[in-house]
Amino acid sequence: MSKLIASLGTSLLLSLPLAVQAAEKLNVVSWSGYFSPEILAKFQKQTGIEVTVDSYDSNETLLAKLKQGGTGYDVAIPSHQFIPILIQEQLLERFDPAQQPYYAGVVDNLKKPTWDPEGAYSVPFIWGTTSVVLNGERYTGPSDSYKVLYEPPAELQGRINMFDSVSEVIDMASLYLNIPLCSEDPKQMQQILGLLKAQKPFVKTYSSKAGAIRENLAAGEIDMSMFWGGSSMRAREMKPGLKYLYPKEGVLAWVDNMVIPKGSKHPANAKAFITFLSQPENAAMTQNFLKHQSPIKGVEPFLDAGLKDAPELHIPEGTKVVFSQTCGEGAIRLADRLWTNLMR
Image (cartoon, rainbow, N blue to C red; front, side, top):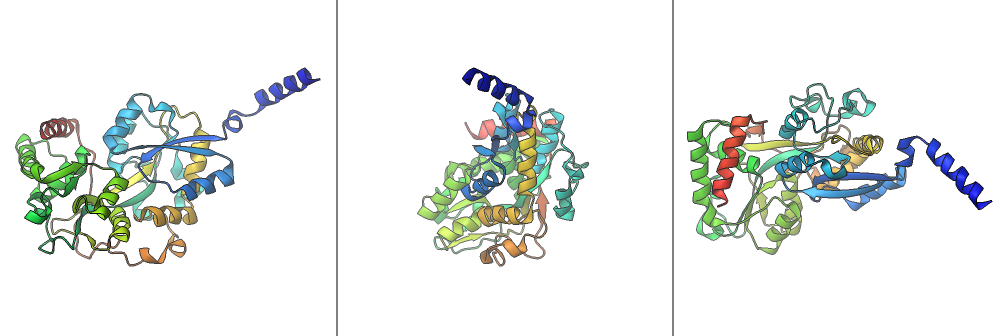
């Protein structure tokens, strides 16, 4: 009898669609600290799919992971300027989200964007700005320019964190020096290198790990850092004296997007996860947790009150906002050389 039941069970299992057999797993790789336990629990409760999350601290690290075979990831969350690179390297699955009903809820200026003009490979997950956060209790002097970061006053020297993402560090330095993003001019890159080398003695750490940066700011281990707007708000909730700067040179803007890496073993689950995260109530849960801006319409009724007047999320009128760009091979080579030189 038991053999017969076992045989029937095996036959039934083999007859089920593959997506149903695999429905209990989903492997996600994202920026560190991007998902609250609550939203993952809600998704699992609704779908029965258990989510495992791995993390990275730069787009370059993600690119290297996916080039090495992706280690079984089903969803990744790269920044917008890396999407064309991932497409060109054939590291993404085409799943045509622009044809899905939920895509109508994406804010208009992020639908079929320049980095994915057909809306074929990506869905925006969260967006925001990159600037500088500093401890306004330790330093009360001028802070209307990135000069405070690159030529720090005595009270901030040795108390600075810079990202360890090549592209973001170079983009911000380019903004300060009024050099075009993705420059392929060796002389201009030499200028950037000179600026970063002169700053280096005053830098305590190079890290893009949002949680560690927040904790170090809150504990007074560092007093200034390159940081994202929403992450700065989360840090300010821990240490009220922190302030996010809108320098006269402008701020960088970014969009992190949900994609399906090539070779995903659970593509149906990946699509279900992306659909789930694109619903206004769930997108609001993401915004309430990360504090960055949401790319989904209709989140307002579900947002925490503190987000509605947070200075980190409301860009002052007249502020120059510059979206990071996808650099050509020449610029990437120069940037890699610069970074190797800087980190010696």
